[in-house]
Image (cartoon, rainbow, N blue to C red; front, side, top):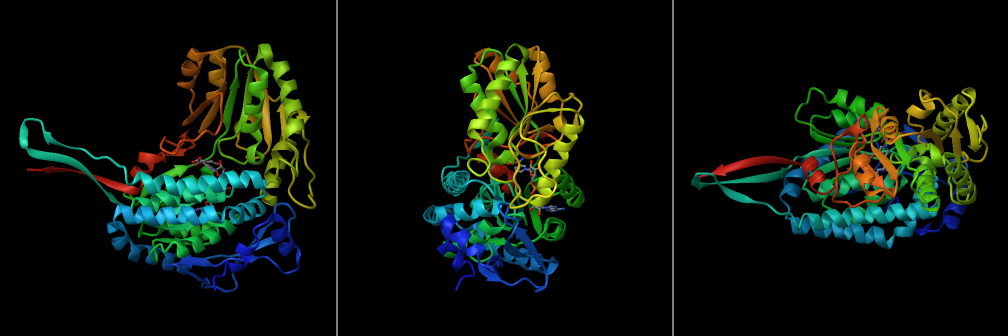
Length: 499
Ligand SMILES: NC(=O)c1ccc[n+]([C@@H]2O[C@H](COP(=O)([O-])OP(=O)(O)OC[C@H]3O[C@@H](n4cnc5c(N)ncnc54)[C@H](O)[C@@H]3O)[C@@H](O)[C@H]2O)c1
Ligand SMILES: O=C/C=C/C=C(\O)C(=O)O
């Protein structure tokens, strides 16, 4: 019997919450290696993961050590020669089976994602849909790839063409904010392009990855093609990244961790690195907007998933001519639409709550105006709730305006000219995403093409087309993923000249 069996039956929030409310009931995870769930090597070494809505234990997961990681990497290495030669059609069929099973079990995934991460059930459903799309997209992408061959100029008997081959074993490491969405954004292209891998989800939110292991088993993904080890970053994560058998790392998470990974792999020049890191994203609101259209976009960009999306627009800059009107409309909108316990979930963990609180204390000490929200209690009871918080009156040098808070906190300030707006937007080490709100078509391009951001959304936010490049500039990362960019991450390219 699968160790996940109990969870599949708990596919409503009520039933899962009733289960967790019984003393001693929580989820006990096992690593998934070579298509089998197995105990980790040190039976006394576990990580407790807490329920963000209650502060009670929701899961115990293995604190995998170097021997567990080595076992998973070996399984992936052994699976690689055969998987890399498996036909695209066969790989595609398996990916589509995985998508179909997740689709059938969508509600179970959404319920456990919501409970584990704290996100609302409706947000969790959106993310499970995206996980399904991740598998479907790469399943079909590999069937439609085009190649080209041509004769070398002046040498009609010499043909030249580009040939790609899968790189090998990948480490796939993901954060806690969109657990299934982001892990599958790595797993799907990894196996689609013929690589094998070891996935290490965040120790803060590991439950849906545990369910995913069972999906792989049911979809008959060959043993070892994808393995999942649970554990912490400095232990399992770092060991995995450093393994010489691991030939590439696709990582999403914090910038500091990205730097550690780069440092840990610096001597292994051939190891492919794709790093998707943090953001402190600007939203620019120009004076030609209709407030009833602009305000909901700015608010959603700030507060979706309690502000815990790397793409969230956490610095709003508004043209001074509409500043007062915008602020008052934003405050009304936030008070009406973003309410803790209804449309807003708690933040993910106690350490994260403390981190966000420390920025709010800093804002208070700098005499910021709290137009909504407040500094939350030092000792939260019954979950890690932080009210959506709109701050104004901070100086441009404030760390609250410069550092990624990754919570339901947005700052609003004014600008006078387009040039100043661009300067303020770019005055940050990060360069992940940005939002422009304007009706002026030429400004959309004029400003949009000068913002330091891998993603620019004009009059919209978090619109995704999975073939386009996703990733950040400056401190927000190196490399791009999506469509052909993901293919570049997971394959080696050689050019042949054949006479
Ligand atoms: N650019 C993006 O696409 C994107 C997406 C989501 C989140 N993020 C960023 O992620 C951060 C929040 O997530 P987090 O707190 O889970 O990030 P984190 O960097 O602390 O952890 C991410 C993952 O890395 C692992 N890890 C930690 N130290 C490691 C090490 N030394 N070697 C290998 N693995 C290690 C963790 O266990 C976890 O699985 C935010 O900064 C956010 O902006 C970026
Ligand atoms: O929190 C970060 C969100 C990342 C989103 C994606 O990687 C994506 O939409 O593909």
